[in-house]
Image (cartoon, rainbow, N blue to C red; front, side):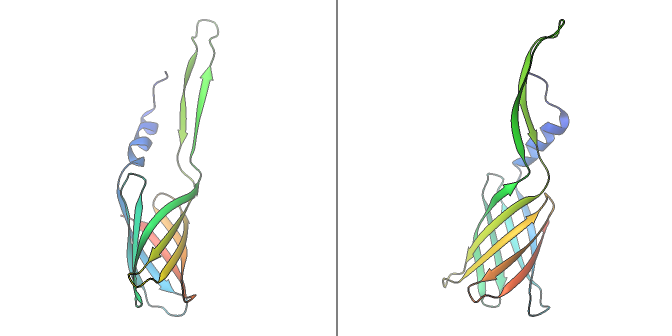
Length: 139
């Protein structure tokens, strides 16, 4: 098997790291900024919590699409060079996420995000059809 590059190793190592994102949430009908937090456990699960005047909403966040790719390669020997095989992993580009949050009294908040590994932006809408713009910054 071919040696893995330092950059590829670092990308694989960081892919499983836990992270916290700070959220700023602004309703489209006022300039008030509310806050939330997005916790990524590093194990493929994330939880988001946003506090608005109507209550606190909490729920799961999942990645729906991304520009990450994974593949296999095989090379064949020629003039003294032996055959080889391995895997290729590319990280980066735009990621899209969806969050389905609920308050203890049964109200819902649905969010869609897109961005990269350090910055995300998106829109949330509650059951009353209030729309909120959201920015998320990795800490």
